[in-house]
Length: 272
Image 1: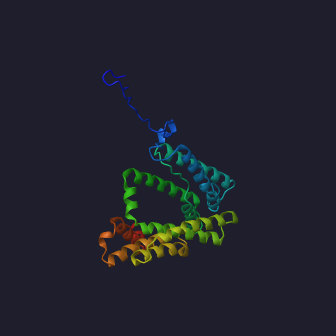
Image 2: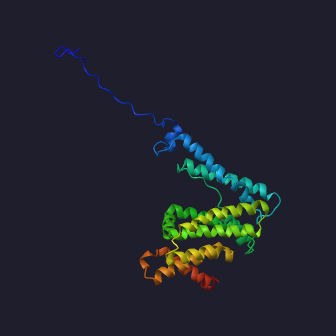
Image 3: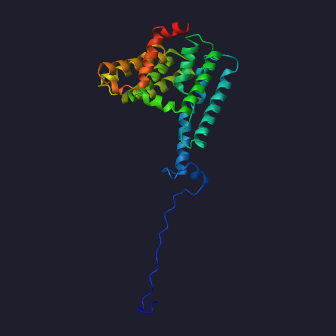
């Protein structure tokens, strides 16, 4: 008690912050609590993501085996698909520390199989070599920072339209018939990818016409490349003639010139 007042001195009260669950090594390494999540929530999200993507393990080899045709191709492609998805996801998780799952793209494998190999008649060994070279180029682009520059160059409405166009392309392949195990999956995937069309401003002709050309160009010409090319050229032309020069990225001008030169045979004559 205090000798002067006869009262007991007050004791300082300190509040202990509530437990956040961010005490384990897993939480600290991936900064789970810091990002506003919990370990249990991330585990549930991971399981959900796996179940949503697991079909790729079977659909990817089913598509590629139409082009890569040798004895025992399907089980080998299935194993490679699982390994690539697992390794890619682990690198994204352990190095980049991002909750992104990686797996082979359902659009590109169909393009590789039904356009490059079966339509253009390029041997699958040569086509795989081109895939390897493109992989090296993508790594180089990512390391030099050009990747972000290129991505920013493509307008958002074209990105949505290209996604929808690839979906329509996959659905057409499914309707034509790529094998019963594969057809249903391609149609479902195509329907899911078509949602990109809802994000296009169809009231603006500068956006709607290039988007439309991308969506119908891919399935009708049976070429993803040609559909994208139509959309890029149309986008540049419409924005230019309407006086919106400042809204045309430099990369879009470059791509437009290269596409026109290629389609008119100028590049072939130059290097032929």
